[in-house]
Amino acid sequence: MGSLCCALPDELMLKILTQLPVQSILNFKAISKSWNETLSSPSFATAHSLSSSPFSPTFPLFVQKSGIFSIPPPPRCLSLSPNDTQPQLLKHLPDDASVDGLTTCNGLICFYDRTSQSYYIGNPATSKYTVVPAPVDCFYNGVVGLGYDPISFSFKILIQCSPKSDTPWRWCLFSSLTRCWETVEAPTTPKTVEAPTPKFDHRCDRAMACTGSTCYGVFCSCPNFVAFDLNTKSWDSFPPPEGLSYSCRRLGGLFIHTCKYLLKTQMWGDRVCIFNINHDLELKIWVLNREMRNWELVVNAGLQNLKDKPGNTLEALLLVGDTLFISRHNDRLFISRRHRDRHSTKITIAYNVRSHQFTIIEDLSLRNVFDFVPYKTTLLSWDA
Image (cartoon, rainbow, N blue to C red; front, side, top):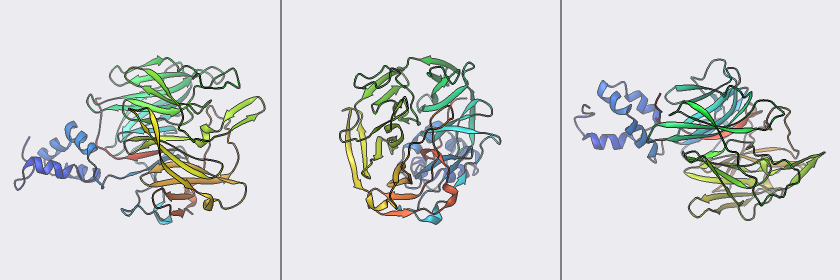
């Protein structure tokens, strides 16, 4: 490897470069062959992803009209004004892709394309994508988790799939090392679940929060918190946080825990968190201590002043930095006629969980959006 700069040692230059935005790094690759070789190396990509640079902010991704969009990162003051919320279409996706399900991990994204019946995994920053055909005997598919190993530069995709709409769903795992799918054992019914119906629903309605080797989420049938180890292919179960309130509703012969709609699980920085807004309009955010296997309440705030009229409720959608994106809509239960329960919504409020200030978002282009995930750009890639 040649020298990057004659004025400064390479070690110092590399330390400086790890603090710069991804787009700047991509531009610097054109300086010379030596710069391109250094900045394209897996070791630099890993070092850059581990840096705490303020120039690599986290911002929201969501699905709208079968495409993936982003909201530009807020200004450095962490405020958000209505003029900052114009969504931008994610570039370099397949032209005819019909996105169904979206998850992220370490700057990579994964989604199911209904058009080609395949999974796409890629890095939007580097415009590199890989196509993974869905299991041949499954028609209904849903991305649940994505794991990435920065040592072996390999990824794993965890999905739920079913051959037909009236058959039980099963869990499947794809590894880029073996390039094949395998069926994994479904989790057992937690003993703490009071079974109102004889059938326990093992599905996770939303993408799980993934640390790289473990995926965390909430089942449709109960508020228990589950974890799936992508390496050992084993399940674990955690009790919900103390003080978590949720309700259940019965629609005909169908018994549904509304926690599947009210609870959100995601990565908040490098921590796994759960948050919800209960029926008393109290926002609570817990973070998981993975070693102690318990929850810590970090935010407890009343949002009664955000309710605009009787009959409306607030739904927490996505936590990005200190900004919580909230939907304000009628208090009703959404049940989709599609193969998996999902509802679209509108982002209406940006609430700062530290200062408790909020902004009403008037942008009409943020209607009918779903599959919200936090995304932070990296240079990470994988072995082809």
